[in-house]
Amino acid sequence: MTPRQRRMTLVAGILAGVTVAGALALSAFRQNVTFFFDPSQVASGKVPPGERFRLGGMVTEGSLHRVPGSLEVQFVVTDFAHEIPVVYAGVLPDLFREGAGVVAHGRLRADGTFVADEVLAKHDEKYMPPEVARSLKRRNGESRAAPLPSGTAGVNPAGG
Amino acid sequence: MSWTWFHRLGSPPYVYGLARRLTPWFAWGAGLLLLCGLYGGLVLAPPDYRQGNDFRIIYVHAPSAWMSLMVYTTMAVAAAVGLIWRMKVAHAVAASCATIGASFTFAALVTGSLWGVRMWGTWWEWDPRLTSELILLFLYLGYMGLRAAIEDTQRADRASGLLAVVGVVNVPIIHYSVVWWNSLHQAPSVMRLGKPTMPPAMLLPLLIMLAGFTLLFAALLLVRLRGEILNRERTAAWIREALEA
Image (tube, rainbow over all chains, first blue to last red; front, side, top):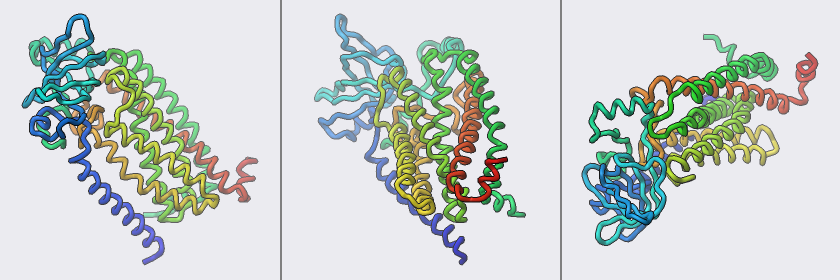
């Protein structure tokens, strides 16, 4: 083996080792590190009780209610399998709307209501001009206006 | 197959001359593409149905983020070539990449933050995509710091080269972070399997900007590479001839 081949093997070996170590670490993280839990994960008890966590999903159409005379809002977050009611007092971000993705940070109350102290709008990866969105909406009817963003769909189990 | 082209790339005077000749082509190409891309993106492209005109920051944000990954990959490949073939010019390329890559990463983080505060409602979240991109910035800064800390060029090359090679595992992690984990950051719109989730009128300026950013990187890299080679070869005889020519 020439010195150059030995160095090549060494660099390839280091890269392979780091890749394997990284893959192992990531697969361990996958179960523990999750930016948000979806309603199905909450329903199946994946969230430690009493702890602050982030709840992610879609805002159910027609579920948004504002309490008159205050900043308080109520809405329902769904992953189309389970639903969780959310209460929040504060300013909602620009992209927040019914039928769109949302990530709320807060705590689950004993009655199953999620009390949020921070609400973030999750943007999906779709971009289109307003005219196209309007004609799409007209064709699909008003009920299913927004497409389902990936990442909030309830089909990926265990935070995968 | 002849390897003379590869051996010639190991010669500092040859690469110095090549870089000097190629720089204007890349620089003018980059300027032209960036002008076209900005006009297309900021004037011609329609506003987004939900984000309005705010979406236009994508024309700087997405190319910066892509370049942050592309520059790191270039740096790691150059460092590996330098380590394996003991090629000084390859180490010089890797060293020249670091500042440029760190700048693109910083631009991606800042533009993303500006967009995030308007759209998500937050400047920063410890989301997998944002966190892994921040780690990339620290990798670049660590690489630069390590180089600066070692006086002997050859030892600096080897130590920082290993760091560059090891850090390359972060590149696929950044790209797939939005797929593997639940994240606040949206999934890819363009770099994905299947069709882009964007109409051609929005997509075309974005691709032009990406090409412009790539040429800009090439031009900046060649300028920095010449400086790097001059610094390394400052005692060599060919330098005086090259500077007088």
